[in-house]
Image (tube, rainbow, N blue to C red):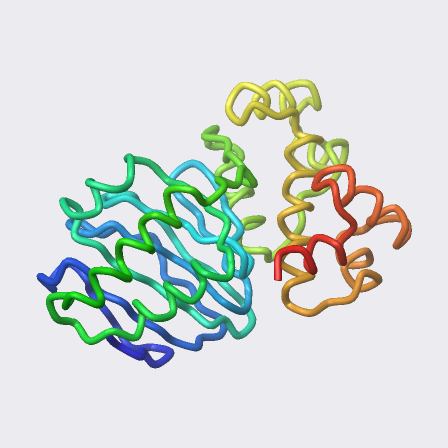
Length: 260
């Protein structure tokens, strides 16, 4: 087990244990793009919200989601407020017995939350009999955990790479289609065609999905419905609530409460 400080470096690849847990409370963190050569990673925060960017998509992890990252998968972790960071690294050969390859966002129920917390505070030794029993329960829970699909595919077109990276880092919000076209001298139809081809969504749909992800981050960070509505340029609080309900099936408050 390691309790990391804000700027302390950690490299799981140099450790030989099959299960390695770390924990930290961090704020304003940007890991930069990196990958783990010999370890699969489980990434989770019991409080706060993380944004994870891979080579082709963006994922949001509020406290009721975890991300499974296979070995050799480039990724970047960002958050702005205080986050209770939890990460478990698994030897890739050991993990391969339980998890198929590929990124997965899984729902975290109360039992899985406690199991992750327990594993993150273990000593780095070969698991004893009681710890192996806990790992068996952990893998059983992971196996039945519902998979979440709230991801945002990024366009590969070079004209939009820098723009989408800026939006990913939340330094600005994607503008309306007409404004984007005017700012960069690109025909609106061309923008939508590129986004549809490379992300599966029109630009307008992509922007709405971005707003949904950002709204979840802002709500988890403790912003009120009025504040989120204002930050994301909704015409009214009720317009934001209707938008959120359309995309998640719940009002913002219902969404947060049912996932506590």
